[in-house]
Image (cartoon, rainbow, N blue to C red; front, side):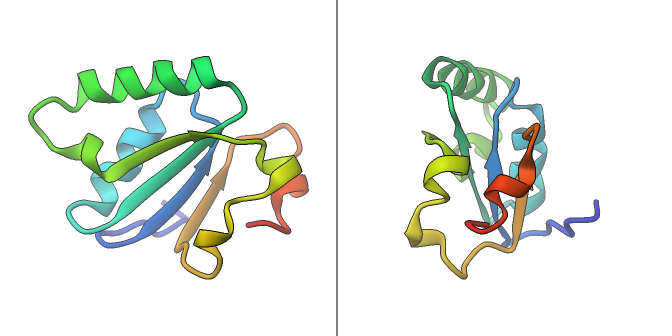
Length: 102
């Protein structure tokens, strides 16, 4: 709510968990926004992607999400997002390590 995610926003998220927050973000940015989510673990990202596909069947929500595997704390967010994100959500034990990139 405090991120003020609305239709058309570009959201960057780090750490997928089960993907339920990602689904909420995708619904909030729909129909013209987008959510890019990254996780340390390839298996967890794949699992969340599968969950998103199942829970959003018929809604088109999953077409608004791209999942990737990346160490945001070590590598930062990809340069292609520099200055473009409307909101960044970090679900990390030490989120301040990713602040410079965000």
